Amino acid sequence: MSGRVKQSAAGHFLLIAAAFVIVVAGMRAAESLIVPLLLSAFIAVIAASPLFYLQKRGLPNWLALMVVIAGVVGIGALLVLLVGGSFKAFQANLPFYQERLGQQATAILILLRGYGIDISEETLHTFFDPKKMMAVVGQTLSGLGGVLTNAFLILLTVIFILLEAAGFPAKLHRMMDEAELSLRHFDTIMLNIKRYMVIKSSTSLFTGVVITLWLTFLGIDYPLLWGTLAFLLNFVPNIGSIIAAVPVLLLALIQLGSGAALWTGLGYLVVNNVVGNVIEPRFMGRGLGLSALVVFISLVFWGWVLGPVGMFLSVPLTMTLKIAMDANESTRPIAILLGPEIKTAE
Figure (cartoon, rainbow, N blue to C red):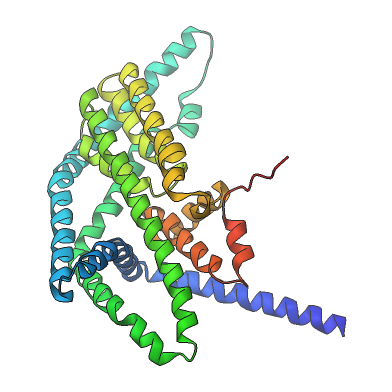
C-alpha cells in the first residue's frame, strides 16, 4: 500500500513538473504577445489607484477613466521625447565607447606589467571583454525600447482592464455561491498588490530623479537615459541597482576618468541604500518583501523567459504570486518561504 502511495506521489510530482515545463516553453514561445499583456496589467494596477480615487471624489466613471488615460499617455509621450533622443545617440556612439573601453583595458594591462604582474590580453578578455559588455548594455536597452512598438496595443489593453475592474465584483457575486468570502480574499490580494506597486513606483521614481540630477551635476552623458534605467531596475531589489550602475560607471570611466567613475558609484551607493534600507522598509514593512535568493532566481528565470522586459517585471510578478499565496491558508507556508529572512529573538 505504501509503495502505491509513493508511486502516486512521484507520478503527481512528475505530472506537475511536466506541466510547468510545457507552460514555461509556451510562455517563451509567446513572448511577443505575453510581454505587452503583462506590461498592460502592470500599468493598469498602478493607474487603478488614481482611477478609484477620482471615482470616490464624485467624478463619473467615464470622466475619471479619461483623466487617468490622459495621464498615462502624457507620461508615456514625455518619456519617449526625453529618453528617445538619448537612446539613439547612445546607440550611435556605442562603437566609439567600445573602442575607448578597449584602449583603457590595454592601458591597465601595461600598468600592471609595470608592477610585475603579467596578464595576457586573452586572459583579460576572458573575464573582462569591454566590447561585449557595452554590446550587452546596448542590446538590453534595445529590448526595453522595443516595447514602444507595441505602445498602442498596451494602451488599449490598459483601458479595457480598467473598464473591467469596475464591474468585476458584481460578476464575482453572480458567478460564485460564496461571493462575499471570495470578494474579501480578492480585495485583500488586490489591496496589497496595489499598495506594493504604488510604493515601489514612487520610490523608483525618486531613485530615477535623484540619479538623473546627480549624473547631470557630474556631467555624464545621457543622464535621462540612465535615470530611466535606474527607475525601471529599482523594481528589482539589490541586484537591479548594480545592473543599472554598471553601464554608467563604464561610461563615466570612458568619458571623464576614474575620479568621475568613483563619484558616480558613490552616488548610486548612497541613493540605493537610502531608498532600499530606509524609505522602502518604512512604508512597505517586512511583509511586502522577498528573500535575496528568490529575487536572484526570479531575475534569471523571467529574464530568460521574457527577455530584458522580463528582468524588469521579474520581482513584481514574483511579488504578486507571493501576495496571492499569502492570502490563502493552504499556500501561506510557500509565501513565507518566498519572503525575507525572519529574525528570531535570541
